[in-house]
Image (cartoon, rainbow, N blue to C red; front, top):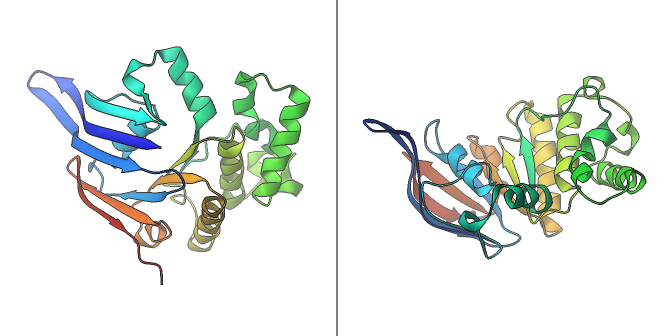
Length: 227
């Protein structure tokens, strides 16, 4: 599914350069649930942005489903992000004036799906995350946990190959955080590949594999032993 070889990412130029990633190589298989951990500045967010095709490496190679990303133009890259990748963010990124189902179907606006089919698909995804009765509610009418479920439904609507979750429980209380993680585990059990950035050990423990980073490098990559 995902293969990166000797990836580096450098910001700045001349004497003012920051090496956000330093010679990182790893492989993530289809249907894995991987947590990426590290303190601020460790490189985990930069890695997530590169894997999600939101940023490009300075050197090295990134293969997504066998396709070398460095050979892809901007238009094709945008299509890959829309069709093969689902994003879940800490701050939800919902449009406040749109209803839940309208937020969920936003990615479908860039496809050949009709408005009627899009709404049906959006409601199907909301039902999947337990929000069938909130399809016409706007974000301000929902709790933080419900807004994150809407964001998850939006990430699923295009049937992506992989979901990237960046601190998906960062703005939620403990109880709601574990409800969201239970939902992600359910999606994983149905075959969804998930790569999640988190700084919380109890959240990372839901994953099957934990990658730890420090100073732009992978310092540990291990499978989790479930109790």
